[in-house]
Image (cartoon, rainbow, N blue to C red; front, side, top):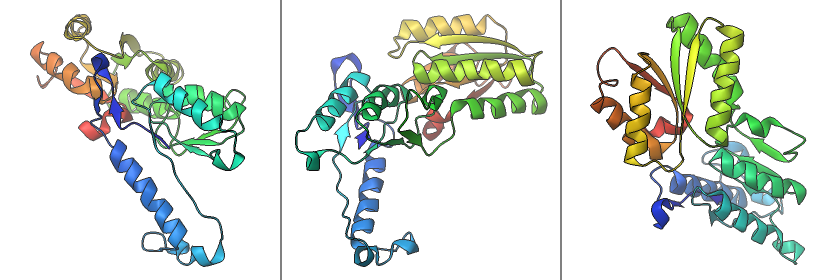
Length: 257
């Protein structure tokens, strides 16, 4: 399992603020139920241990939300000489950028990889990522729904998109713009990218630039590391909490709101 249990901002490792440990615990509980035939949560699993001689094991690797950390883990896991020690499948990762990097390797090694929350539309490419799967829709699908709602239900004609500058944020922002061209051609969109590691100066600058657009609707494609800092600065500059400005966000910050 490739799970983000920590992050390393400014070269200092610290625990992540969202559900890495919860996800790991849930996955390990599912394995325990499968191995013991415990049907408490899924009744079809009851007695599975008597009907099936396959036993599941798990090895957890901390990606630290980093492509490099995750790639080192995947290379190590898939380079084992004993075939019985090779993973049958990989669960993860969280960030799309991490899943993109690691699924290139797992695809080449013939190992399926499934992510619960990597939504970048770049991962839709079945030729590049032949063994990658996920349990959520891609950002291209959610972008269409978002644009239709903003234009048809809220009447939005001007939208500012603030997105993290990685494969997830860039693909999502591009998907929003493509959806607008098809379903809301009269909507004017300006996109502003944010570095993965934000400094106070970065935040102050981007919020100032966004404020100068005069727009009242903003869509954030961020993660938890950006949300609080960005919104505090938006409030300080008068474009959040004013009663006139409206902020919406992609799924990556849902647990913060």
